[in-house]
Amino acid sequence: MVGSALLNILIATSFMAAALLAIVPMPEWATYFRPEWIALAVVYWVIRNPERVGIGVAWIVGIMADALTGSLFGLHALGLALVAWLALRLRLRLRLFGVFRQASVVLVIVGLQLLLSQWLRILFDLPRGTEMTFLAPALTSALFWPLAWMLLDRFVRLLDLN
Image (cartoon, rainbow, N blue to C red; front, side):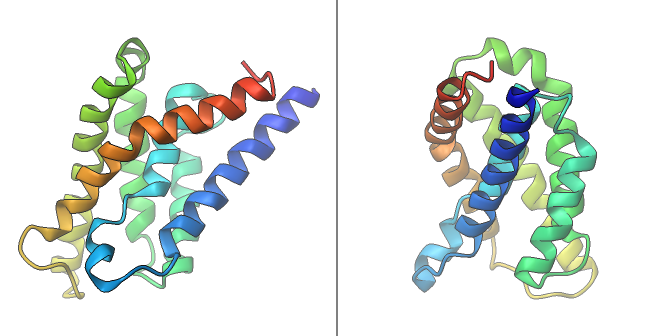
């Protein structure tokens, strides 16, 4: 029971930390390369604990991200729901992969999320990235995936929540 409560706190804390990393001020040139921290947290928790984090949780976290960033209501929610669905579909395979091979799958998953987001921005005539720069966060997210995995995994093991 205590382990379950600790796990819920750890999941919520990781999503809050990811949200803070998503809004931390950065130089203008670096904003194009900001990793999709919330998507990384969704992928981790869907792989690690799909009973607790799935499409519904991803949707709720996405709505909160929409409110936090002031974007079109449902934009992040739809993207994170797609991320969760893809991670759920690939979960068993991803658990067998090493962390660096997982990063290549994360590149594709986050890339699809960003493509969906870009498509919705075009559809609703909202400001968007220039040319292909909107895909840069997929690359940086894949590069940061091993760090995110190891950090979150360390907390899970430290709290003995296996």
